[in-house]
Image 1 (cartoon, rainbow, N blue to C red):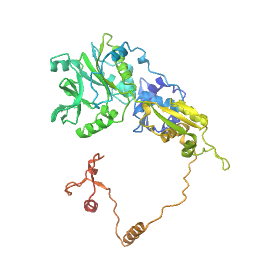
Image 2 (cartoon, rainbow, N blue to C red):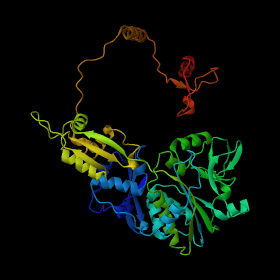
Image 3 (cartoon, one colour):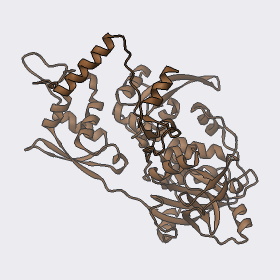
Image 4 (spheres, helix red, strand yellow):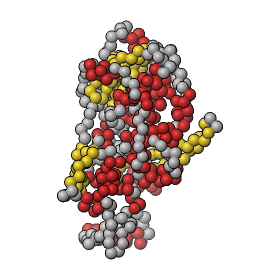
Length: 463
């Protein structure tokens, strides 16, 4: 992900932070900086960083998320966005509306609003500049606003043309529902490619009209254009497993589905919708916004993890400041300070020297056990500040007769001029085998079944 330091500086004061120091902190914190990119914009040189986050940190896949992470690593205060100051009476509208999208384990959170009265899709200059800073080319249309919200908040909001829906249905009264597609249903995606759906694919429908494949792509016929005057904006969160299965089944992967595959949370879903509406209202002051559909909004419970000081010292080991006569370990006061930096609520038990830590639901996926918390403490303190020691092994494994026999045979054959070949145990030799043992969830089609014969791989090597 390409992030603009100028944009991050709006949420976190980085003016006095040395660039090399920042990169070192990010790298030691688990966010590798792949490249430093210089961009010249308005006769000014700007620095952007290409940062790769770990797969289990979906909370960091945005400018706001990564800014919060930098705030934690540098122990600097984080500033909230200005766009959330005015939200009108939306909270009341959300609370008053009943759940009209039934929960059938098809989604985690769902919300749809209609906005009418568009007359200007042009994106402002400052927004275009931020897109350029993050490696995106501005198109001066509504997609710029979508991309901006995706970059800033991490939420992929989908948009449809209301008038096209009404025109096709011949009525302005329609209900949204998330249901399985019809068998052999033909679907023309926004990328101009047709896909044949079956009853395993989840779709978003207006009455019986398919608007899009849930969490992946909209139907070409209902995409908005520069002539659109009314839009239906969908803000939703889908289960990562469902999205991954559908993408694999269809052979279709989009920027939107890529986000859902990483299990994004719904904590700021409504706020991201607020921000989008407030942005487009600047050039469209007469915009009329209405909540159209509301589904279940998942609110996950926080995990409670017990963290023992003895366990921390056992895992992280002594500090580099230790001497031969005295080993030094991380101070308990520092551990409490790091928990505060992480914004984790905790209760310290001085008798047992342990912490009862409440994990916010935003980090429920990557902090499950005490070892994950210990990793967070090591990350903030710096793993390079601990001594690197090998574990004390009292005894080594014993070579049994079977291993000794195999080893002796192997060495004898090698000494007599034979070659030893080692092949992958997963293959795709379905043509040769009549009943191959298929994997349920293969990573690659070339490795989709278990090897049942050595011969195919040997022949390939010889060839």
